[in-house]
Length: 488
Image (cartoon, rainbow, N blue to C red; front, top):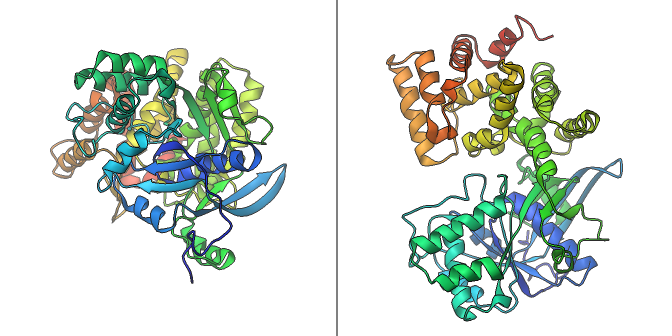
């Protein structure tokens, strides 16, 4: 069978390279790059995407073997009816391997056509690395790579304020546009770059915070043979996503002309304030994802659908949202409850196989961003601990032991985080610490949480009690103990 590329697939279009995209993963391809294709088909946007990798290069190489083409399956409810549709996305022009083709990256910085920069490097991606250098090829961090790119653009156009870019980060952190700008400015200072460059960053470029929402499980391992037969090509980059999507972008009124989403059918909103959109989505949808993952996975489940349909885990998720997350909001209760219902229906989408292990990437920073604010607000409002959220936190710590039963878990997180947990759990294995001391050491580690969680009254005792139950009886039975011998 022939590979999908621009030789074997003739029904493609070519557009000017308007967008630099940091991230080659499933989400950006199934969300942003699909939307760019819709804009090209329904408006005069007329732009394509150049992709570079925040890490590694394997997917960049695969992307280039397919000339940027890939198949997107959208499955779920559309206008109230179940829909399973697929299309070839042609909005990516090429990928640049920053390790082998860095000069092409710098050449793109001098392009007249470039206007947008989009990123999704996970919550752990917008960080400052003092070891990054301007002369590195490439820099290690995403903001380091970005700062070098913008500096070369500044030089290429002699500081022309009309040659700046519109930057739209999609990382799930609050004020992601503002934080990205701060780190870029920090690099400019750290590298002793021209003061004119710092002024150009501020004046010529627009850093827009944004909020993204679409469940994109990614490559359909379980149904790849069926889908390959259906599309008639070998496609290493097939992506599966749900029908629902939301992209809320906090930006100036002028952005509506440059990103003409109105009238396209896209649920993309350019707004003055992201706060209500972000808090609702991050705490309820993303927070529930992160909270359920270690509990469900360590209970023997593998997908989100299995989790919400499981009598015990499903009830845990529903009550976590209804009794411990929603009560931390000041918003309209009916609206929040409806949103939560939609989220649970999306989780149960029978078309989507969203693997818990794919959600587990960088779980510590995700819990800190998505779940910890709700936990802290609950404690402040109720002067008591949210037992389900605490159980999830305990399960997360147990998950980072790296075992499900006797089978190893392929943990994916920052190396220093993995080393920390490996060391603390080895101490436990060697009988050097017991559950309470382990819980206290983890909860007080400010490098994980940016605060001392051990100072929260009762939290160390609650977590250590959960860990003891998990160790003695397993996570599912420990969950039953949480409810008092049986799930009600």
